[in-house]
Length: 82
Image 1 (tube, helix red, strand yellow):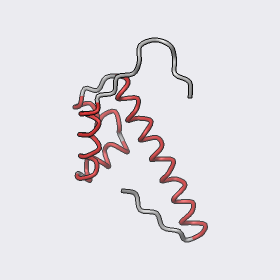
Image 2 (cartoon, rainbow, N blue to C red; image 1 turned 135 degrees about the horizontal axis):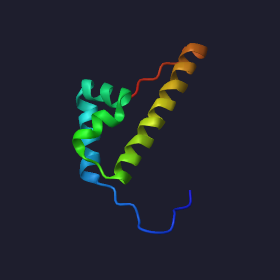
Image 3 (tube, rainbow, N blue to C red; image 1 turned 135 degrees about the vertical axis):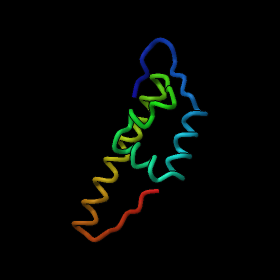
C-alpha cells in the first residue's frame, strides 16, 4: 500500500502495548473492545493514527473470526483466537 505524502504516521506504541496487554488479560475489556471499540478505547486518548491502527486490527480480527466460524460450520475445524 502506497503511503500518502506528508507527515509520517506516529503510532503511540506504549498505549498500543497497553491496549493489547489488557485485551489479552481482561476478558471484559476484550469483549467491550470487539463490540464497542471506540467506547472501550476512549480512556486511552489515542491520536488519530494509533486509533486507526487499532480499528484496522479489530476489523481484521472480526474478519478472521467470521472465516473461522465458516470453517468450523463447513468442515468441523476449530479455531481458538488468542
